[in-house]
Length: 148
Image (tube, rainbow, N blue to C red; front, side, top):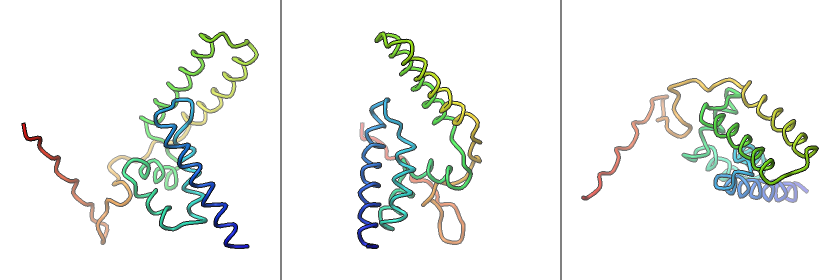
């Protein structure tokens, strides 16, 4: 039974991760909630995938900010609110019924309120996986120069 539960958590994590990745390029799908859900599922099914996700350069910092501080970065806030506004405007342009627009606006207002009332993450905190043993911060890699 335990193995069956792990498989269910693993499949749920993989589906959430795929939806989160799709959400990067498709503004209708939110990326962060799916990545957080994938992290939750992987914590119950695969230590390897969980560790990979929380130390990933793109996905790791928002996960760490949420887990440690319940915080959402300024960039993520702006992106989320602008996406919600854009989707609402698209609904108006497409001529959705006023009742649907009202429901959409109410749901997005609730989501935007939640997002905007979360704290900001502390500044100058290294991303997960960027600390050396002993608590020292690793130096960032030097940028590669182009051969022009």
